[in-house]
Length: 384
Image 1: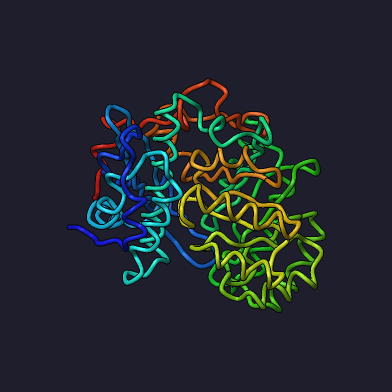
Image 2: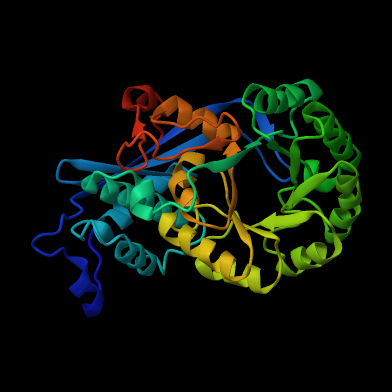
């Protein structure tokens, strides 16, 4: 399968005689059951799928990944690989633009955006490995350490499960900020939400930052009503109190409540982040490099947030974000999400340690982001 490019694009597509070329793009999906049934305010699940992309130039291979449907891997192989193959391995932004233009008729948001993101991440890793540099050195560092927060606290957890997880982060790993899910059953269980918030505060003590994530489950009035309870329990982060599609609603809540309002994890394009910021919808912009277009677009989103005087937070997939998070001056933190940490620790060599509440990407000097897939361990779980 081949795809035509415009004359202007074609003139930039191929490497010069001295440039390394992208020789091959491959993708595979692997699915792992969760350790217990999980849910948030608007969705329940019992498995997580990792889509891994390898980008090869000569004898050097870069790795990227996203989380999503197994069919994402087939889209990478069938559509994006021909777009990227034979381009210069140096020109990652050029490959990013070529991919974005090529998917116009397929619809970018969702699975397609995840596919683009995984390829982009693999290309950045490939470039750094060809140069023999940690990705932190290629992107540059604004900070040596990246603060993280423990994230889980699913609505399916009973009080004992929630307490055990929270104490594991705070007491076991020294992470001073944690988040739980609220908005159970599309906001229809407010009383239990309040009880779980109070229980979470009791678990972590007064010295730990406590965050909540409603995953868009509440109405505007519910979110405002709940905010007074959050204030009573010193909650400082209210994530997606209403749907991230409702920028006006987010803005109304933000202007009314004391707690910081955050959203953006479902931003699939830079233009969406611009709309969110112009609407005054958030106090901290979230962006997910495995959805928004990879590290190329994530770094642009960080710059856009900085122009509005706001911080950015990396959503999930912590090892993908680590080097880019270290590169931006307006980083607030990175999400140390239970499902992804569990899977990444199981299937990748080179994972990072959050002890003390931060990670230090690039510290071991390994080229790229330092991750390699444990193929023997992952292959029995291949689903695409």
